Length: 114
Length: 525
Image 1 (cartoon, helix red, strand yellow):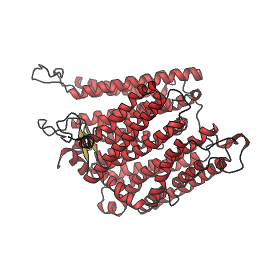
Image 2 (cartoon, each protein chain N blue to C red):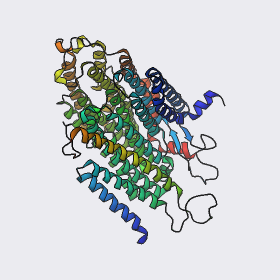
Image 3 (cartoon, helix red, strand yellow):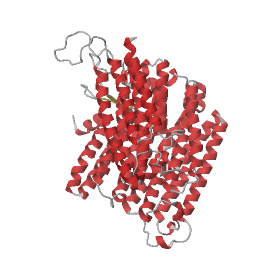
Image 4 (tube, rainbow over the protein chains, first blue to last red):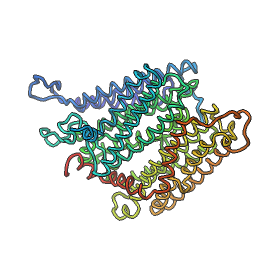
């Protein structure tokens, strides 16, 4: 049971993230929802690679016993970098929209229709 | 090793490396002078296209090409000491990937040529070209890669660059609003893809597409992964019911970018086909998934065209038609997928439907790119995108009018243009599968024609309007850019048979042949 705790956390984080993205109206809050979802995905990958009692996957002078999988860690590093770029871009959009429309509420940002 | 050997061996990675170099040196070139920068971007684009053609030639002549990053030899997919597991990042270019590479190269060259003059009046072009090259990197990477996580990375590069370009001309905030919609959806889609990657990695300990395909069990988790991937990629290619970003993004982006966004959407379409055909293939229930894709396709066709008819913004109208045309590709390939498990039906009409759908990808990129470029030329000259304010432009913009006619007749499926060739293949084969679907497809084509007749009439026909008395023809580089695409539209419409035999049929076979894809990476499996 305790073993599954990280996976349960992933599910909870995913639900929180999805609800935030779908129900919140503020661009910044939507971005936070996306970041929570992204964290859930990252935690999922990391958990998949975890081996109980394993050492960090640094090969120089490593003891030759159980090692945590290195690939998911590399994937998560990449994913974090992409997440930062995503957040930066959405925030910069939010700044421009705030300047031009005077609001960051997506219900009021509806000039493109039809 | 001679220079030509070097190019040939490393072609898959050069397709990504050259545009990356071009992208990040572009601001430096811009510091010297705008002339140097223009030569730089055009030159690098031509080099990229040349490499794409060399690679495509090699793939079509000798079969799939693989490139393994960091290996002792470029084609050494499985290191000697790894116990038969491909551990490195790999590019697998089979006929389908090469087919997409060709599309990207042709549209890239004509769009860049067009941009040189279409964007010349605007400021901060360094960033524009940098992002544009990053889009090219994203597309080439997505269609070339043989590693599912790598696919995710290129998908995100493409989304980031596209969103940046859609918002590039802020346009009172409207463009940013469109980009925000596009980007939030793209990011959500990408996170779905990341979850699917995690599911695959957890089950099969592999990220290599060929390895996952070989080990595919189609367990419950794989079904979840399939749903995540299909939802994310169908959204990215703009299929109904997840199409609502398409009209906004396509209409607010600069016209040259819109023409390339069509290719970007098709890279996602390629991803969708790669997932269902190469990774799952007949381990899943092909009939169900095929029908789901067919239903996406039919909905896209009908909803796209009915939404297009009342539009007043010329680019928004064309964007809804792009949604509608994506439906044809999904319909053709979906029918091919639905009968994949049945050899008799596959040879009777399944392959033809797939060929029709894949050929339509190519044709759509050409004529839709052409139409968006003509719309851009009109907007460039008269400064409005409202169809009700246009009129009588046929007197002054003769070449633009001819190019528009070619594009409009091709999208409506009128012979002898290329849209007819692929639509005919789709009608014929889909009719054998289910006559109702073929009839819907034909009706949608008629509505498309009606819609474009209306556009043609309100833009080009009628007396010369006084406010547009001094409107001139579009500048020469824009005409050349449009001319390249128009020439291909006519050429492929006049001679569809050799094109289908040389390019389309190998691509369709490569897509359906899961064993061949696995063997090209893992060796004689």
